[in-house]
Length: 459
Image (cartoon, rainbow, N blue to C red):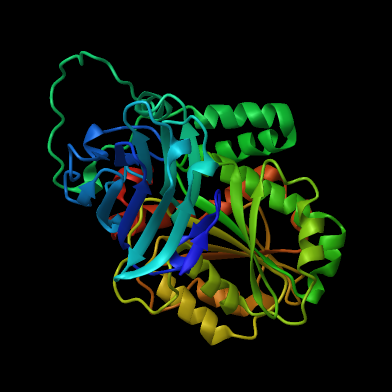
């Protein structure tokens, strides 16, 4: 069991592989307290009031969220995250106080999250954490590439009205009559919330604080428009070789520049202004996020934290990436679907010591919404040939070439090219190269059930 502190965030898969949860809340007070769970969109707004679960509405349309054993200051929610519609990306657990009381008067409070009958996460609080607030957000369970938990502990002086306003709703004494929403019969076809302005805000932020990234982002957009992916959503990850032979590439700043170009691609594929960074050498490392706020000098800081290592193991990094996004790196024999695919930019300058392990993960991940784009850096000893926009080399990277034709896969989920110097590739040509096989993979992955067709967004 892990005890959370106020404001702490954790990955749910670090505590349990289960998506069936029980959330128990108890707030002790002399005043009447209502416990509520709000099902919200990715930008934390109310999109369907049937996902406001409280004493007067005990369950969501498909019973994905159910309130049981409720009384003043108490509530137990049974939740099946796997059944939630795609439009619900965040569950927010709140407490509101009735009458003249404030949250500063509560004697104690606790929220427990259980899986398979065992408490896996707990968060405790008391009146000293608050003052005159009449409503508090206790905890959020939210989806960002995978399910995560955040202990919020934030209060609102205005009570329920302030809480609803914060979520984009409102409280009125006389509600205007509207046509009832249609019943939900299949969470996979629930309409997504209306497009928000987060991408517009992101571009404005880039224009003000990172004009170089904005220029790269516009070039990436052109390449995406060529292949019909201008409205496509995906998570981008950059996986970097930190074996000793990469030293000159890091010292010269070429990896920093390349990382910025991939970050710019990430700003076209989603609106959070970040990409995930993974490293591999003798070991694998989850190195956090590269963002539009921290990209300056990021790679130099990265190498100080993770010094170059003495060997190269692709498979260790691939295992970590699969676990990070899907909770497991085990062998699969049937499709695993998700709304948002993962595009992994995998950069290396040498062969791996674990070819069979790498093959296993390529084959296993072919059942997942995960695409591997390999780029090898180095000069070929067997000459060059022209393919597409730049010279691609055959020779020293025969194993990576083999992955293009690997058997035993649900579908082709990898592409490879090699280049002597990544800095020599013009930006527009690089982005075109990165989209050589991915668009067709998106179509196949959508057809074969790896990506929700409603969210694949490709012509």
